[in-house]
Length: 247
Image (cartoon, rainbow, N blue to C red):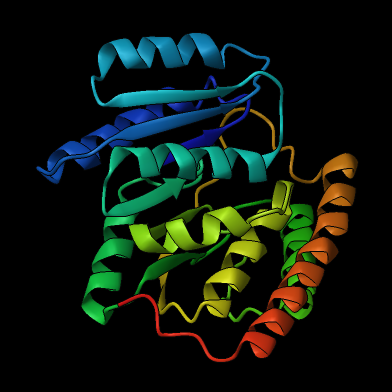
């Protein structure tokens, strides 16, 4: 499991504690990776302290803030290096319980799905954030054509081979990476299951996803992803039908 984090010094201790408690309770080989996306608060110091407390905690750090898309790509790359057969991520802002990953993986196993996509049962954000989120969901869904009900839920789990297939294709920055993942999973005909997860209010830190700069960059790369998906569809039509994947 990995936790993408940007300026989450106040939230990380609680989130990491919950993640470690869940992972150790599974009595299985595991790794917890914190991806620090160029934080300028005390996230670095907190991560060092957490590594001293927990032997299975690893860290990846970006020297500068590169955005949510880059944080997820770095997390996926580090997770692939662990050799684990399941790769999950949970946002480090304290709005999700890392133990929800258990519901995701169990649902995927029960339904023989390749990936489990969380959706927020009752979104705990303020009105402005919910309105913007709903608009982004409908826009990105119409643009990229995926079917999932909650584009931005920061709690997902994948079988290893799904990440191996989609990671080299991910180009979206900031919020765009979330709908892009869903669209590329569908393009490759991987089976998904959607699982409801609890969503909690942010108790510390500030959300950056609604900033003007992030929104504009997300809009620009959303259409770049659409163009790339269309190009790959055209290439697959020219090349002919491919053999089944996913097992």
